[in-house]
Length: 283
Image 1 (tube, rainbow, N blue to C red):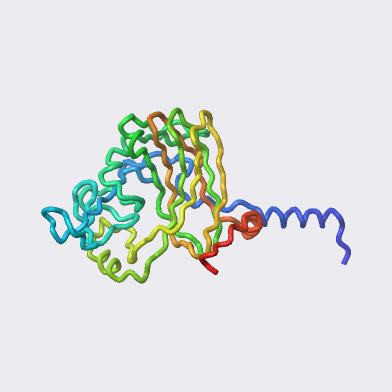
Image 2: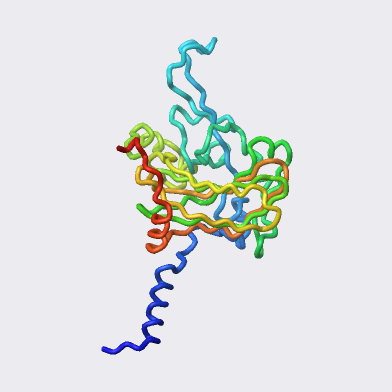
């Protein structure tokens, strides 16, 4: 069969377009055009009402606080006692109703987080604006996190966003978690929580195993950032969320946040360009 040059070129172009076609954004309202959820008081698809926990060690001599037993009790920043199992990401405190993001033992930090965030002007249309006063900018900073997103085994991803800042320092994180199916204590404990504390109906602990980080620093004009990432096999994860973070007194803004799965061709290109260092511990 005879194939003309024009048809051949057209076929090649269609193949290339299909191989590198952009996959959809996994984030809900990544461009913030949907504004605020008036019921939740947070940007649609995002969370500003977050809180941390405080581990309280158990002592053999609790009066003099001597002789740690190795056991802990976990207290929400609002004062609520969770019990002897550390609460993990995307469980809500049954008392204050704030979201535990499962990052660090930050106590009552972030309890004014939502007061520093609003929907404002973005690079295109609406965007997310931060106003960091001295007391917050010099301490915990401001953090807005996305809905929890199901990951695909063996997949690679691209995270991209536009940002600008005045005096504040901007960072973006993709926090990645693995389901710990072997933690029987946590599996039993989570079943005892009220429904409002576990709206996602989690049945096992989520353990953070991988993090993608982009340090955007302090771009004074709208600047675009984009990076691809693939977790090593031993850090394979099941769930992830995006965290938009700023610290130091000043202002910051985000827009056009996109988290998307790499196509097979993009994944192959990423692996070719990033073979990664050999890990001697695995030998």
